[in-house]
Amino acid sequence: MLKLDIKTSSNYTVTIDNSLNSFNEAVMPIIAGKKIAVICDENAKKLHIKGLKKALKGQNCYFITVKSGENSKSSKNYISLVEKLASLSFTRSDCVITFGGGVVGDLGALVASTYLRGITLVAMPTTLLSAVDSSVGGKTAINLKQGKNLLGTFYQPKAVYINTEYLQTLPNRELLSGYGEIIKYAFIDASVNYYDVKYGNYETLIYKCLKIKNAVVSKDEKEGGLRKILNLGHTFGHAIESLSSYSISHGECVVKGIKLAIELSKSLYNLDAQKVEEMYNLLTVKGHNLDVDFKMEDVIKQIYNDKKRQKNSISFIAVKDIGKVEIENILIENLTF
Ligand SMILES: NC(=O)c1ccc[n+]([C@@H]2O[C@H](COP(=O)([O-])OP(=O)(O)OC[C@H]3O[C@@H](n4cnc5c(N)ncnc54)[C@H](O)[C@@H]3O)[C@@H](O)[C@H]2O)c1
Ligand SMILES: [Zn+2]
Image (spheres, rainbow, N blue to C red):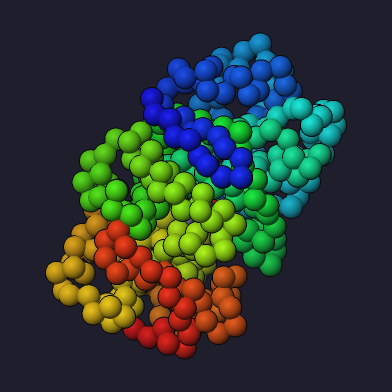
């Protein structure tokens, strides 16, 4: 079992274990005696709720299921969840546990952060992506019909509990998605290296990635500057994700996005061929496909829709070396390949 203390506007601990053995010690003191709404992803519930129900035995729990998929991060679900809490007479001293991937994590956290102006939140991420990324950092969100993640808050949980046993049932696509973000961390900070990504066990790998995320977020919780480096690969990645109509997973698109970031960085920093090869080896260590099956002009057109765009330029995260990235402001018209 590993523990990581997260330092933000409010501090909390992430517990990473390969079972629910430390749940009692890590989470119970925060939730005991409260009414608990467990907002569950339908697949995570089907596969893993039995153990959690046992761990929560004797508590006043309501299990609420949310359909799997990005469409669930909707205003309709958001309103229906807060109304559910109201109809169950949840008070300020009650709490929400999110049990699922980033979809349920983002949605449930927005519910917890806004219901009665904020009630206790505990996150239990069940996908690799949510374990290494979305469960820490305090961003909550739902999608509007005008775009993804347009409505949200910054809100920190009181605890995050990661049971890596849950990751055993993830389909390959979801594993590749999570590993895409892990590879991103390896490009940002050399404390996660090629061998960690290739051979590392989940507990250690998640711990190391979250340590990197925490180091960044604790210095810039609301993305004024430094936090932008966590968007490495995301400007291009989001464009590809959207052009593929979300048929390619987020993390796989991030890896393709990092590949394009490397292509641009080659000329920015005169990277030598051996260095670039080393970068490509890291990008493909888990078998990610680097092909971009769209015209670059379409990818760039799509970038015009990026919410992080400022007029005609974007904050682009470039790669100087493995473990060293830079924020570069670049004119979109200069994005040439
Ligand atoms: N808040 C943040 O900082 C942040 C960061 C990155 C991504 N996100 C958001 O996270 C979301 C993506 O998260 P995700 O990749 O976890 O997707 P997800 O929540 O859709 O989960 C992926 C799939 O895995 C299934 N699943 C969940 N746990 C499982 C398990 N243990 N075994 C088998 N199947 C399981 C789900 O039902 C779903 O089909 C996006 O909406 C994205 O915007 C948020
Ligand atoms: Zn991402």
